[in-house]
Length: 173
Image (cartoon, rainbow, N blue to C red):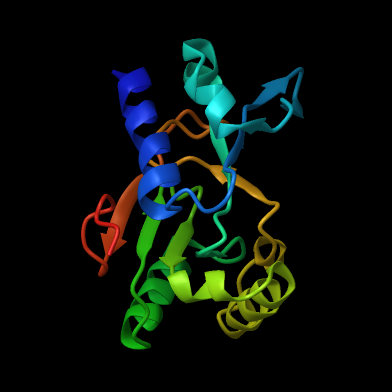
């Protein structure tokens, strides 16, 4: 079941949300003797061809039309307040977290970002991230995040959708 769900999610990320515009790279993150380890970044098409890779990948690269807000600081209530503020401010997004409140990511997809070069997209992301006091490392597209609806690499808990005002995750509008 996990394999099939992950395959559907990866296909949706690449074809539905990414619309095949940018190579999507994936990796596996794991802990060995208390130390965080990463596999090499693997292109989606290579992963798609090998069942064992689909089973093992647990992180993905940010998409070019995506802005991710990650509130590392603060507690879970601070995260819920951020969700309320973004909703009030008119952003359409999907908010995720594990049951234990880890992996708190808010995903905003905006195809207008694709009309800018990679440098300008980074500047736009940085401005919005600063306004909401989130993790600035997510201004660049070369950043890995845990894949949605699968087990988080560190806790084993599922990264679940906890709020959306954008519609179903699989709705690409």
